[in-house]
Length: 151
Image 1: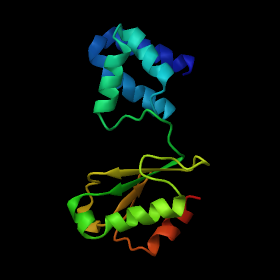
Image 2: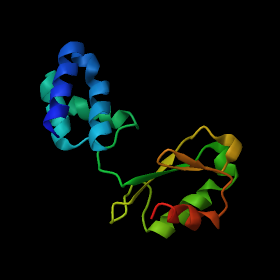
Image 3: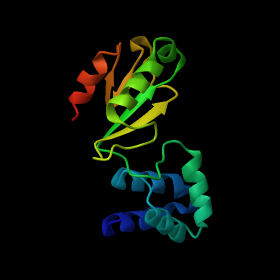
């Protein structure tokens, strides 16, 4: 963690107290991309809370990551509409194409893969999201083309 982030966390925690826990974790993740052990320890010390309590919050909310992610995060929608339209097959194809499973990052740190309950894009099911871009109405043959845009 850099010194600027530490100063911002201290200011936030002083001002808001323990109610700043989630915003503090969000701030760390926005800066680092995940919650490192060091950052969790720092937040715990700053808020005078047990590390276990910080981990409890960080693992309860699926917005937080405890491991670094790749340059590009692929989210495969597993909601009902996407499931019915074949997102399971798309997920398997992506896993095979990249040689990883859900929750993993490629060795070259380019891609991380997540399965999510819903992306809120049912009208274009099945859908995946890479970073902030949606890809909808996907078929099996589309997967290599989509991934090649990010390689």
